[in-house]
Image 1 (tube, chains in turn blue, orange):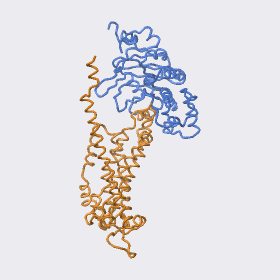
Image 2 (tube, helix red, strand yellow; image 1 turned 180 degrees about the vertical axis):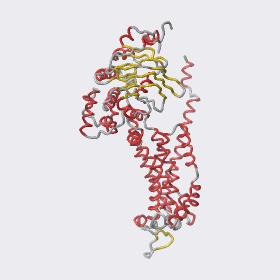
Image 3 (cartoon, chains in turn brown, blue; image 1 turned 120 degrees about the vertical axis):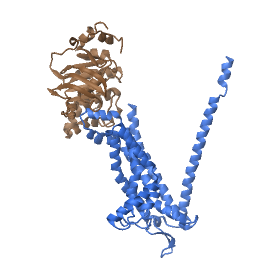
Image 4 (tube, one colour; image 1 turned 30 degrees about the vertical axis):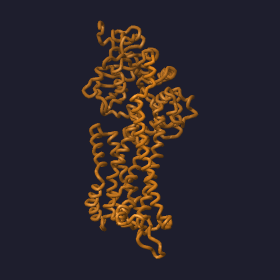
Length: 264
Length: 313
């Protein structure tokens, strides 16, 4: 393993405005420790990629950030967002999720119209005016680069969309709530290359207004898309830094091995 | 080479097994088909005898309120007004379904959304137990607990639609519950995840999403429950009072189609007019159960179309 020293210098603290930061996060499934001591700071308006082999804990980590692990796993430690520890039991998790949206691996629109997919959550959060709803639908579909493709069929079932379109609808559905941060759990892994590249273009565009954290299995995707990359291995953050540095001169031996495709 | 050719052309044990298996299943299906058709034919022909051979008018049968096939009225016509039984049957069916549905949905939601695995399993076996209890036991409990209770509270005999409704409520509750559980379990897990990730509360998720998606399944469950209530004879017969008169209120004695059939069938001789009249009641029951089946099919199909499209993506 040679220079596999997991010293503090491999975890970088970005010198930028931080959108969300975890402090010594431990995650347990029952008595099984899935993540230990993960401390990461994600800069605002940047794309941060979480990479690592299956079972390395990157998805679990991501799901902890907006409390989707509530009732599934125990998350210990602090998650600081707007100088609030959102991992505290006192925090209103529904508000947390409104500010920190999530897009899942499989495109999972509801079996309703395209419009209803977006207005569903808006209505739940008390937005009812017809004009306001229409405005939000258009805004978020435009932001997800889907508007031109669906503007004439907003009342068609969302299940008629292709996989890539459906995934962009899911992104639109999340950003309709105007979150600060967008968490994406392998959003392109179920899509073909053309759809994947459309999603990536969309994300690059979205980064101007949102902080994006994305889990990906795809090394190329991480390297061409993200500004920062964290490498997870067996429940630990091995290395975190600017994507360029991670991919050109990884400090830990194991990161290099993973990136060059020697395992994982 | 020749050997392989021979082998390829030889009838084998496997092909024989295939054709035997196919024969057995077609044979059984044919028997069942013949059985169903003959039952329908038998009941229909018997049930129609009263109208064609005895010249009873259909409107008299469906709309008159006096049931007394043995005697003739002042115009010399037999008294075969089935309306009291039809009304009572529908009353107990609809009332028990209305009563059971909220409980069934609550239990189903608890099992699918709130309870942990052990709790859900426990409830599951309780429900299966409730399904398995013979209806005579429900009837007996109704007779010895529900009827005296109603008598105590409302006076009268205690027999009637209310007692029938309460007994049927307990009997159809497990049917509606377990089918509702199935339909809620069929709502894709990711719907719940997405909804939560959009900041919806558990209640919003259940009310606005899961129940809506599960509606066709829940409706099917209710119709199945109603079909069971409509067709239940024994338990109802024990608590309804068995008087073929128009029910005046929920606690006056009455009689359903089924209870009239079971009480009457032993007192008539096949081929007599009184017997034919009972067959006409049976025909009404058969038509109703076909109707319930069709309804289930229609409602279920609506849900199936949705699910199919769901699977496609």
